[in-house]
Each structure stands twice: as C-alpha cells, then as structure tokens.
Image (cartoon, rainbow, N blue to C red; front, side, top):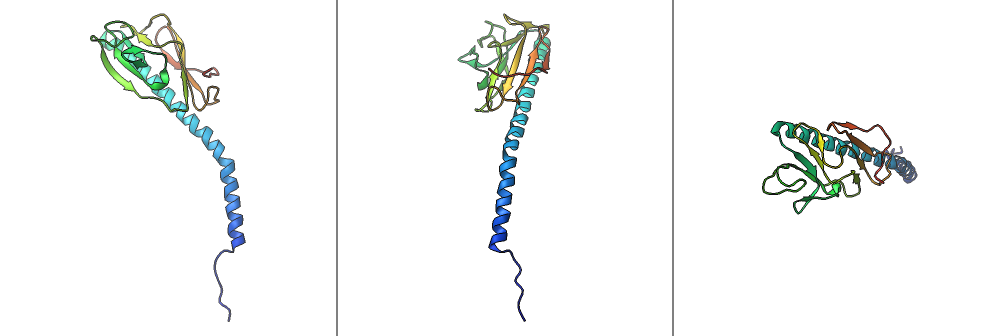
Length: 171
C-alpha cells in the first residue's frame, strides 16, 4: 500500500507566487493614487477647519485673527511648513508682545505641495477678510504639483471658505 503525500509541488507553488506578484504589481499603483486622494482630502479639510476656527475666533474675541506660516515671528509664504493661528492685536502679520497664539498646525507631507495667493489670511472682528488680498484659492497637491488628486478651497471676501469645484493645481 502506497502512502499518500498531501502538499504542493514546487511547480504549483511557483505558479501561485507568480500570479500573486502580478496581482500586486497591477494593484499597487492604484493604491498610491488612493492614498494620495485620502491624504489630499484630509489635509484640505484640516485647512478648512482652520479657516472656520480663525473666523469664529475673530468674531468671538472681537479682534483680528491671522492664519499664516510663521518664521521668526513674521508671516512667510511657505505654507508647507505648517502655520499658526493667532490673535493679531499688534503689528499686522507678526507675532509680537500683544498677540496670543490660538493654535499651531504642523507641516504637511514632505512630498506634497501647497499654494496660496499670499502669505497670510486675516479675519476682521466681523468675520470678513482683511488685507491686500480679500479672496483667494488655497490648493493642496499630493505627490506633484499637477496631481489629479489636488483639492482647493476658495476663500471669498466675506470670509466664507468653500471647497473648490474647479480643476486645481499648484503650478
């Protein structure tokens, strides 16, 4: 009587591994786009929440509130390094002795890009935008500056922020 051996042959195992590698190779690029889409959505929602936070605090405190990337106490144009939201009671767009930092938002993913028309967004005590630019488009681009997963937020002169429906990029 012959004993039966249960198991896989080397050929069967190699064919299974080749098929699995082909499936992973085809599926991996789509996972990257999915991840970039989620990352873009998450970051643009964070920006929208920050804008709502800044506007509501301007009205609540009855004071100018500024949102900007800060280096050495002054607003800069590099939004990718994160930004601060602060009560801007002293010199405009600078953190000085009269200002209070309300919150700090950290840097974005190092492979992503952000663009906005100016170096700061300031809300007046009535919730309207103040400064030279009284409206703008804030854009987040994951992976590269012309990513299909890019999302934007339009900021109107009234201070209201809404998700952009237009095609956006960071170029």
